[in-house]
Image (cartoon, helix red, strand yellow):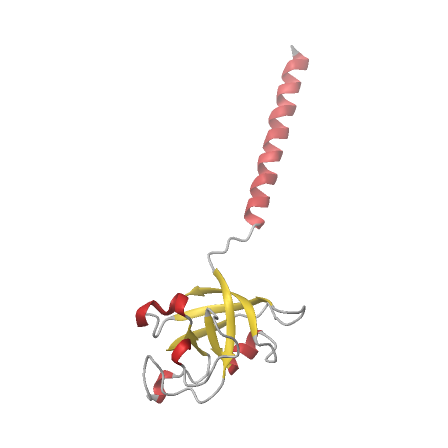
Length: 149
């Protein structure tokens, strides 16, 4: 009888330890609600834009802005939206700085932008300043994680 109880106690302790380890591992997992896409870059001239025309106040003083690709354009509803963008990979190792994240404001539609993007079909086309904040500026395009804020 004593042996049985000690076995039951050992099982309960072992089960508790397993449960605690499971909880710790669960907390260590990073949950991401971001979407994955591609980013290209474009350079001046940036006006006129599909969102705000020639209005110079549309551009943040930080020059961290972007043109929306068809996937996020949403018939112009993307104008003024802000996204956090992080480079996750490129054509070769070291092209991205995955520790850097940039917040951009949508001011244009990539297909109609005055300046042509460095790569076609991108999810989002970043201003030169925004692109070089997170990736090597010599890259034509990179893979990104992005989330609307």
